[in-house]
Amino acid sequence: MTSRSEPVVTRFAPSPTGFLHIGGARTALFNWLYARHEGGRFRLRIEDTDRERSTQAAIDAIIDGLQWLGLDWDDAVVHQSTQIERHTAAAQRLLDSGKAYYCYCSPEELAEMRATARAEGRSKMYDGRWRDRDPGSAPPGVQPVVRIKMPLDGETRIEDRVQGPVTVANAQLDDMVLLRADGTPTYMLSVVVDDHDMDVTHVIRGDDHLTNAFRQTQLFHALGWAPPTFAHLPLIHGPDGAKLSKRHGALGVEAYRDMGYLPEALRNYLMRLGWSHGDEEIISTEQAITWFDFKGVGKSPARFDFAKLDSLNGHYLRACDNARLVGLTIARLESADGVTIGASARARLAAGLHGLKERAKNIQELTEKAHLYLVERPLSMDDKAAKILSDQARGYLTALAPRLGDLPDWQSDAIEAVVRTYAEEAEIKLGQIAQPLRAALSGSNVSPGIFEVMLALGRDEALARIRDQCG
Image 1 (spheres, rainbow, N blue to C red):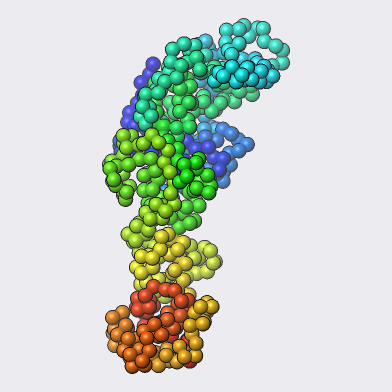
Image 2 (image 1 turned 45 degrees about the vertical axis):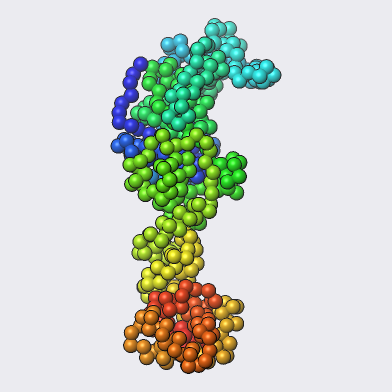
């Protein structure tokens, strides 16, 4: 039996029949982290042998999602559909060595076998009737499938890096199909041949594939190849413990990007869905690469929690470089509205961003809050702002504007002092001038602190907005 080459090689092998869902993203992340931790290689294989369901749009979505998450792969992308000759040749080698055989069962016979097995409570559905039968006795006109000869006794044992030692009695393993009647290879055969050809040393995937691992191990042995090390991850459940669904967050990675999550926040969150390092919650990617091992992977299903994701994203948003956030916000606005944001508006946003990102959980919220810095004069007032700007309130603004215009130093402390002094002299409460100021500056009754807003807008823009609403 041949031995495997080193170093560590992991792979992510999605089927391009839809978007890159969140469970697949976590599987890719764990493969990527382990490869980087070990100084090995992380490879990408597109399992596109289902030609009817596989689409180029899905392939593009998978690649785009991985790139957005920052999960770079090594070597060229392998498309399983281009390796069919290799898969077929492997099946032929097993036929030639007597480790596989032609099966001529009709669909009706197979259905009868399955019904009998279920009635008897057996997991093994195929009874092996063509295993040692002379192909010369085959019924005419039947196109056979090719099946592997699984061992009939003993057990198959897997030293799983997450689940621990796992065994199954070989008597429970069917002589699985390797080539269909039309000559196309099955998933089981294709995966084994591809993993060998790609020098994969560690197969890290969801534990819904654990039963496949027993069959694949036997197929590796039959072909004379060393099986990879397996690590089967518990699945992700919703917060209620049920299987993850769209209402829980089983969405495509692009949906999380559209909702305004940062890739580093999503990486951190997915990393903690099933893996831990002590009590650490906020873990940089660099630190995760250093720490990642299978000992930190739990055996119980992880529960998806949007509140925790929002909290993590808020942390990364506050720590994010302002120039990057301005770019993300502007790009979102320009894409949604089909407009071009000018240099002066960009500068206002950059000046006011610190206060905005302290109050936002994601880029979408930040974009909504950024409107007050990006809108051009004259501002349109929402209903609440219009109500605030009564004739009396406009009179207060008219009296205050010259005092603000005379300020030698446009700083928030100086602005606040002028406003407070005016309120005292006019014998009004601070809110009676602060609320009209907020409405005039933002077109709304809600905004960051008005003195912070006036500083970010700059003297000319702030005064112009106030004067637009003067009585």
